[in-house]
Amino acid sequence: MNATTATAPSYTLGQMVLYMLRLGTFGFGGPVALVGYMHRDLVERRTWISEQDYKEGLALAQMMPGPLAAQLGIYLGYVHYRVVGATVAGIAFVLPSFLMVVALGWAYAQYGGLSWMQAVFYGVGAAVVGIIAMSAYKLTRKTVGKDRLLWAIFLSLAVVTVVTESEIAWLFIAGGLLNWFWRAPPKWLHKSGLNALAVTQAPGISGVLSGLDLPLLGQIGLFFAKAGAFVFGSGLAIVPFLYGGVVTEHHWLNDKQFVDAVAVAMITPGPVVITVGFIGYLVAGFSGACVAALGTFLPCYLFTVLPAPYFKKYGKLPAVKAFVDGITAAAVGAITGSVIVIARRSIVDWPTIVLALATVVLLWRFKKLQEPVVVVAAALFGLAVYPLIH
Image (tube, rainbow, N blue to C red):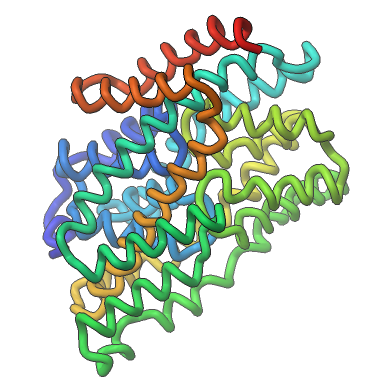
């Protein structure tokens, strides 16, 4: 089951870092697409990571607060190269998109807004729906299979996500526990290592504030550390929390600036939550961007690395495997539901409907078609069509 981790890895740490750099540079589509890319590239095509290791990482990332794709990338770096692998894989994954949003933040501050962004997002948003729909389909087929209980968990979470437009953390745990008690005897409960996981959630969050003495940077660090430590769900799930603090409470940005910040996250590759770098830059320049990104990603790093040894140690137990399968089905169900939620925001008229469907057809028909090519074409489509209909 965990045979991959029992033998020497078939890749070097440098190869993993280069892969994460590439994914962070060209990985469009948000968390749903990114976790699908990691499965396709690292499990199916390159066979660097075993199916079980991937499912454990996805389950852990879904259980813990913070950005889903970044946590999965950190865990996959941990699989063979432990803390060093987790650290460099996480940095490599986040760094490209961080540099992009800082550059956009500079341009935004210098030239007073990004008027072209609405047109670009019009096209990219529709294409992204097609990309994440394909990723969700592949992930569902691979992780849920024909198991009726897993399908029930999957469909329940998909419906809840569509209805509530949010990801409810305790339902992921409930899905894992349901499959656990159904598949494995309850007497193994004390062996599962869940208590150990609960103990490891708390330490280290406050460390993000060490060495910050300027009041504004201290406020930024504290706020974004809370965002990274207490917001469950992936991608846009963090947006309401950010709005409440950035616009309503601290008045760092106005409504238009905040909407532009979210748009920046959607049109740049890598994790959607990297918009914190753009927000931090607008509030306090480059140092603000660094503090905001560190505050957001340090908790998720700790929440991944600290429990990881327990997942590795207890992963072969039937009880834990059943729990991981259940929570994975719940996670993929929520991801599938989020496709519909995002589609409601991005599919607004006939051109966007056509573009989303065309993206699905192209990715289905041409297996080697690279997603960045689709995104660039969609951006050009938006620039050309949006001014004609608005």
